[in-house]
Image 1: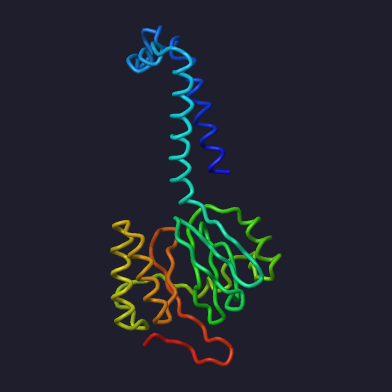
Image 2: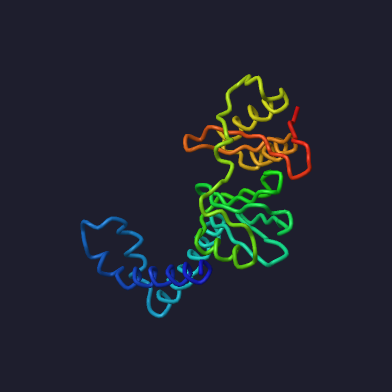
Length: 222
């Protein structure tokens, strides 16, 4: 839809502007007189062809950047391939214990409540819910079943190991600087310590420990 809609829309808009160029150029109070006069001076069919080509290229550019903001998924009974910002990850169905929407994030949890994937972007939650449920994934309509476990991170909390504090502090810095890749890498390193992290509505980091899967000892990260 993005790759078809935006180029068509761009072509139509620029073609209409080329049609109106002469009229706009005749208005003494209109802005951008120079560009409109230039367009009005180009004969047909060159002006129409040029407007359509430029509109298509502009639409393709917009679609390219817009696509990075959308979460897409290819789901089957064996696995889900999830993509956002042109980065894909594959999550096996057998490893998935919960799927839910958390704000603008699509989240998949494992059986020990570790986050298998957290993808931030635009997506139709109802369509995703239907697709996941159709293939037997445990969609959670009420959101994160472990939301109550999260606590706001503050420096020197005694129940977190020093390694986790160091990673959270570094991640806080990465978030402030807008370094998304660094923040995601630090999220992965925290997960290895048994710590799940997310951002609250105030952008502050919140954390919780993973819970033990059935028959496993709890991972403490200590």
